[in-house]
Image (cartoon, rainbow, N blue to C red):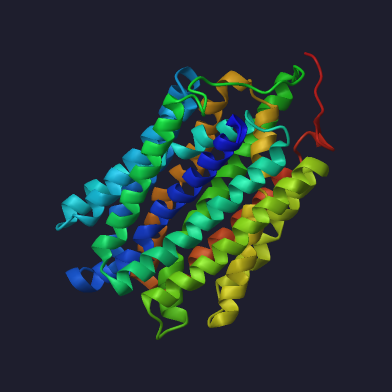
Amino acid sequence: MNNTSYTLLFSSIGHALMHMFAAFYFVIVLTIEKEWNISYDQLIKLWSLAALLIGLGAIPFGWLSDRWSRSGTMTIMFIGMGLASILCGSSNSVSLLFFSLSLLGLFCSIYHPVGIPWVIHAANRQGRALGVNGIFGGVGIGSGAFIAGTLTELLNWQLAFILPGLVSIIIGLILFYLIIINKISYTNFFINKDKQDHSRNEVILVAIIMLLSMFALGLSFHNTQTALPKVFEIRIGNISSFQIGFMIGVIYFISGATTYVGGILADRFNQKAIYLIGIFLQFPCYLGIAYMSGYSLVVLCILAAVFNASILPTENLLLSKFTPQKYHGVVYGIKFILAFGSGPISVFLISEIYSITLEFTYLFLINAIMMAIVSVFIIFLPMKNNRVIATQD
């Protein structure tokens, strides 16, 4: 196995674990709610700072990886997430759980600004590599809910945090060993590509459109991922944490698989068209989710997650076209500040909407409206085929 294969392997595992840890609390909180006799809207707010740090940590860790080592920064991520998750499982008070969750969010922030450039610079067929990597992200989101639900049912919520934490630490130590024996490069490496010059106006236009779309996609993702366990508990009824975790696992396993398809399409077809179609098709899905109940709700959630996940390789490739390679860590850090920095807004919306209505209809209507608005803006992206149309100033 060569360096490129090792890079893709550990980046993919990191993608899965990051999303797994970020999804744990949304299922585990349902058990803590009963054990600690504290309301859901109060407990879900404990994730607020963690959600904020997943976004805010992206730029400093992206900067660190640009100037130091992407593989070294990934090692910090694995070990840090593991220790923080163990601390979450050891929490016996609201204040300690809040601190532990926040620490977990900080270490989770490492992955995207570091792991995505790590993959892009190690791959010849970038769309395909990002697609493979995206599958693991979907697996992480799905398995996070499933593992948390299963371990909580079979053991307890504390071990649902602690056991995966131990696994993450072990993986981090293995990565560190492979770096020491030079199986994985300690120094950063870059792809060879022709230099592209972009007019200032086009760069500004793309920046505005992409900032808007990334924020909207991030907020809709967080709204759905965070609220879904409670939505299923309310609208399906008489289901256990295991069943909730299983259904969410199915949703995100399927969406993760379609990320691979999206990556292949991004290598072969018009990236602007792929991006536009994927965003627009989320509009009717969220509109239906706002009002549906029962198992038909699960089908719509699958479709929304599929359209959301399948365009991620395209989005990452669009960003890479407009930015210098040596700053990719910082650029993807900015992206994920928007994508994950919307997390606290999501937690606030969910808490307030639920406390007022005891439901989530308005939450998914917000998602639908955002997708409709962003679709209009994407039409103005200055792309033709997979080339950037650029002119000199």
